[in-house]
Image (tube, rainbow over the protein chains, first blue to last red):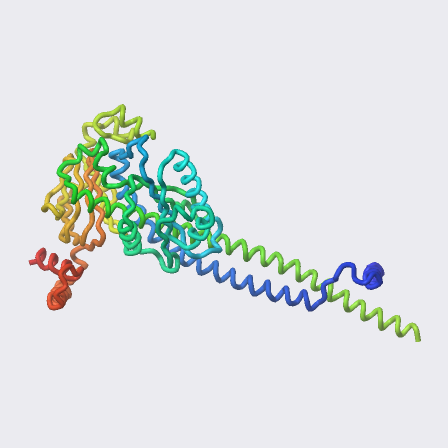
Length: 294
Length: 151
């Protein structure tokens, strides 16, 4: 075995270094940097795990709250009138930070697909996105659909106030939409989430819906307040689910990154040891052959 | 989609198949959900009556109440349980939905059980707010309603 190593080494030096055998120093540098990366991904995983635990705890009441908010739409079966060229509003919920798996791209894919089908049917679509990452993805191809963009999402857990700020700005923009959807990642479990959507309707659509007649004692003011509050509720629900999915995705992503890093460290350590032994052997052979020559 | 099919088959508006068999007793129970963004107080619970303060006036909701949508005013919500006990909560604002199947969703922006609130602190806040002449300040509304309710 030693002979074969010696032969291979001499072969390489004779041909003027066809393949650059990594020196000890190169391997040491690589090893050090990968170890640092592993430390970082491990700590990111722990931070994400802590944030995920908190987000999941806050999600439980938020889910009941959100389901209560859409209960009216489900039970009264409110639908926008079909066939009319109505205006759609899509609210995509995501965040500012990356390294969380496919969270942002899933929402972006769903939004792009919806835009394609809706514009194919001749309807007008506008998009509100919550989160910088989503804006970056959509800006390249669908920038003329972007109505409003929200930043500074994802650093702190979302509150009802955040949702109400988004809703206020959206209503102040003055885009008279007939119906729409909030597109978010619904949290299913630590390892899985699914892109989902919840419907939103405008005041006129709700008022003119057929089943609204059974609801008694409603005037325009009350309905408008109710609708605005419902909009905030649905946005809040989407935000909460989205944060939980994002943190769990980040946790799993960082976990697999740490595992990959430790695999690489193992392989590199073996290569390092082999190289170190080869260097030692080479020096020994030089000494021995030098001594033998005397 | 499935619910729509059930809906067309059954009158009145009873969505779930499992309620189909006991249609007569379905509307004598109220499925009451009371939640704020951060906490759930009642989830599909069966209660006798709920008193709510709304923008158009205060009214009590019993099972088989006519469907309606209302917006809440700052005030006290009283929930009468099936066993007769009453629980009071202070709500700052929100909405209430009574559906045709006698389910009630009370969504409050902020809600606290009354015993969690301190009357003295509330009074101090009220005076502070009044002296600042803040017309729609949260503290004032909160304090006012509590003072009214507890006095």
